[in-house]
Length: 99
Image 1 (spheres, one colour):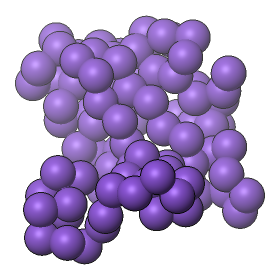
Image 2: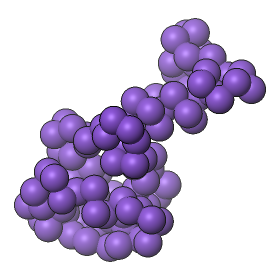
Image 3: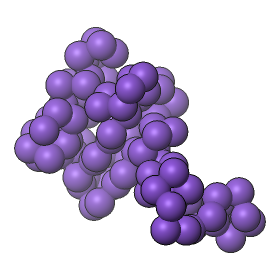
Image 4: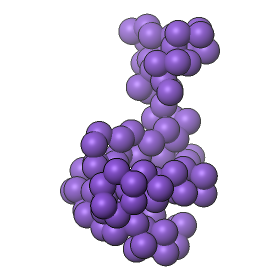
């Protein structure tokens, strides 16, 4: 998705931190997917950017279809099932992505 936005000029790659693609994604609450590992920096932002229901639904779908119903979250690689992930209270999701 970031590559497409970069190609159409919606975001640009420069050395300035505030205009960098990764920084832009981090601030806007983009989910980073690396195989079965999910990273999300929105909960560490000021102000906090919570994961949306649409993002949550897509992660559950991705985990069920591509990884047999399990994904690893955050830098601790907490592996949980998609059933558990979909039942976690929205306020508690930030605990999955803590350092």
